[in-house]
Image (cartoon, rainbow, N blue to C red; front, top):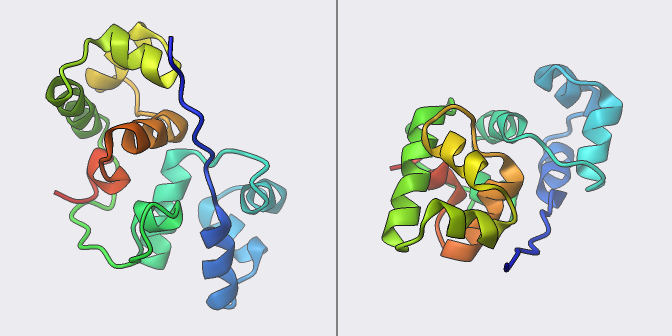
Length: 151
């Protein structure tokens, strides 16, 4: 069983906050979370849920790929501000079929279960950021595309 070892880098969320002269408290209020929780994100001490990362992407008008340093280009032509579990599931299934993988194989490659991949593809659950990032890094696709923010 192969597993991924991709480390998420959230340093740009702090860079954008400081550049825009916004306090952690203000961003935490916008996200409806505690300031201490937000601080852990900036320090890379906690994983940001994809829903919150998407809110930050919308707030700063930058791509998810930019926030996670997949690209250095912050500009993006966003078509969807909200995340749609069904669309994300369809995109995941497209990647899997394009790479000629079974759900079980994909699950092994990113370190999760076959049943979770099935739930993702059926739109029952939204792909977590950790697995979404692993999929994007391993199969060279945009996080914004996977999560349906761009076409």
